[in-house]
Image 1 (tube, helix red, strand yellow):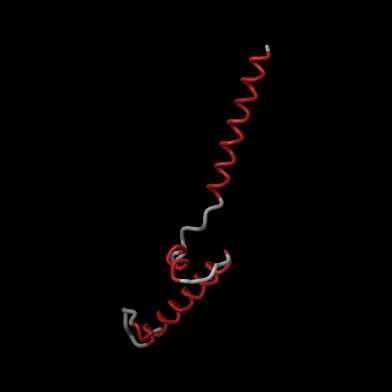
Image 2: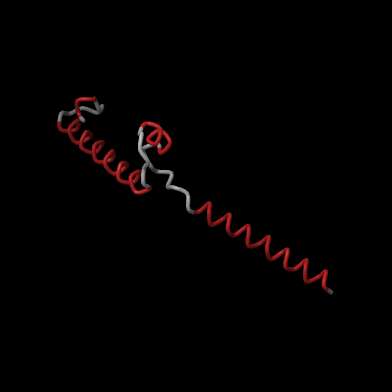
Length: 84
């Protein structure tokens, strides 16, 4: 009978570990970031907070939107460096 209880507790532990892994998978950064976290981190000599990446992504998206508007106002379908 003690062996049955040990087997049940081992099964319960395995289930808990699987749910923890599933939770960790759900906490990954969104895949829709334009910037690369690893390249950003490698190009900076300081530590970077987790909020910085989201703020940088917003800034880059804003720059792209402004460049798109400028190119469209000039009747072009191509973004060029001077649109930034």
